[in-house]
Length: 112
Image (cartoon, rainbow, N blue to C red; front, side, top):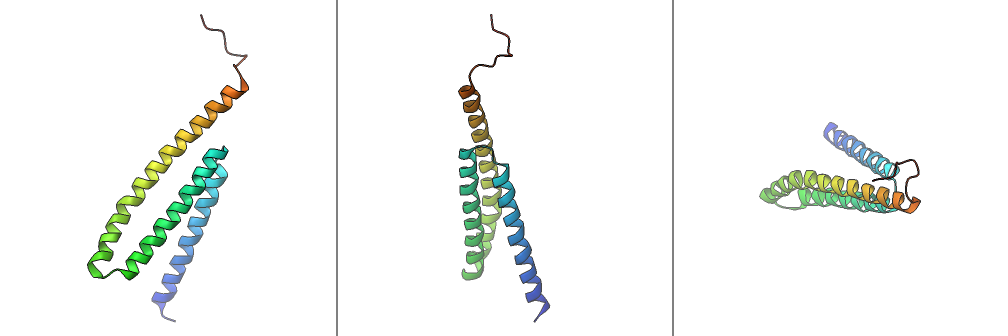
């Protein structure tokens, strides 16, 4: 086997393992059911984006696969930023709902 093929397979295996660790870490750090469901959807969407890029890179003709790479380079960071912001908002929403369900805080002094 050629060294290029071995390097490519090794890189592919490391990339998939990194993705699996990222998914497991994201799901484990999710605190509530809504956040966990959102993380699950975001992980599926990110795997689909990566798979779509790989298919586009190998199937599109010469100038278009470079365009798909440029789109991928800009779309992934934008999606990560958006998903991170939405996850923070979901976490805050669930925390507020949890505090509201527990009732008023007894240790807090009464307002004027």
